[in-house]
Length: 62
Length: 392
Image 1 (cartoon, rainbow over the protein chains, first blue to last red):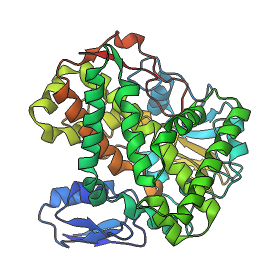
Image 2 (cartoon, rainbow over the protein chains, first blue to last red):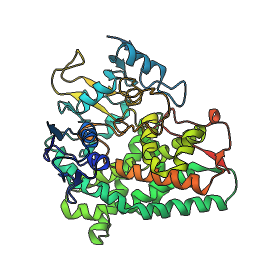
Image 3 (cartoon, rainbow over the protein chains, first blue to last red):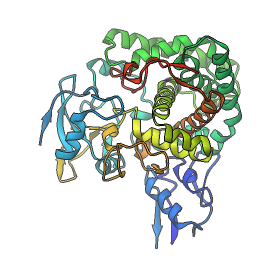
Image 4 (tube, rainbow over the protein chains, first blue to last red):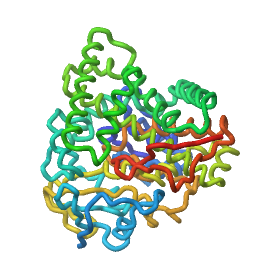
C-alpha cells in the first residue's frame, strides 16, 4: 500500500495529521500535506486519514 | 419528489434533529423544500450524499449566485462585499485559503495549548470565587473562544461586547433586515479601522501578517469578519451543549474523567451529536448534476441537513446514542470538501481543554435548573444555549 498526495487539491484541514501523525505532516507555510511515510506503518489509520480527507487530496495505491 | 414545510424546522427534542428531517432522510433523502424567503431548493439528508455533494466543485459556494439558498431575504442585502473564503470557488478559493491556513495547522494550534489552558483556568477560578448559581455561558463558554480568537487575530478583547452583540444579532434568524445590515456595516467599519492601525503599528498577530501578504483592504476586512464571527458563537455553543450532554450522560463523563486520553474522541462525538452549524453548508449547482439518482439542474440551490446526516445509521451505528468511544472522526459537523472549517483544530483543542479542566476543577458541577427548562437556541443559525445556569 502506497499513499499518494495531491498538494494542489489539499486545503490544509489537517485531518490526516490528526488521524495519523506518523504518516502525515503539514507544511508550516501553507498547511498543505507532507507525506512522511509513503508506506504507512499503521495501514488502518492511514486508510481512515484518506477516507476523512475533506478535499480528497489523498489516495491509496494497493 | 416531496415538498415539505418551510426550513428551518424547530426541533421537538433539543438533542435530536427535527422529526421532519429524519423522515426525509428515511423516505426522500434528496427532496425539494421551501425556504422562509420563498424559494425552493434541494435538501440533502443522507451522510453519503452530502459528502459527495460538498466534495464536488460543480456545486458552487458563491453567495452572489441568484440560485444560492439564503435562509432569509435580508441576507441577500449583505453579500455585496468582496467575497470571503466561504463564498469563493476554484480557482480563486485554493490560493486564498492556503494564504491563511498555515495559521491554523495542527502544530500551530498545539502550540496554543498552554495559553488556552491559562485562559480556562483563570475563568473557572473567577467563577468559583463568585456567587452560585453561575451562568456558564458568560463565565466560560463565550469568553474562552472569544479571547483566543481575539489574541490570534490581533483584535482588542476590550471591545468584546461590541462584536459579541453584533455577532449574535447576525446569527439570530429573527433579526430584521435593517438591523442585520447595520450589524454588518458596524463590524466592517470597526475592522477596517483596526487594520488601518495595524498598517501603522503591526503586531505579532494574524491580521498583521496578512497585511504583509496583501494590500487588498476589502479582502482583508472580509477575512477578519469571517474569522471573528466564526470564532465566537460556534465553540462557545459547543462548550455549553457539551457540558449539558456530559452532565446528563454520567457514564460518558466518567469515561473521560478516568482517562483524559478519551477526551479527544468524546469531543468528536459531541461535535457529531449536536452538529450546531446545520445550515452552513449550502451550495448552488453550476451545471446539471446527477446525485443519488436525482437530477439537480444548473442554477438550483442545495442545502445539506448536516445534523440529520450525522445521525444517519448508514454512517454511524446507533446514531442517536452519545457514545464517546465510537471514534466518530468521519462526521461532517465541520462540513466537508474544500471549505471544511478552517478553525476546526482550534475548536477541538479548546473543547478538549475546557471539558478536561471544567470537570476536574469543579467535580461537583451540576445544572441549576432542569435541562428541559434550558433556553436552547431554536431561532439561531448556530444551535446552542442562551444561558446555562450551573452550581457546584
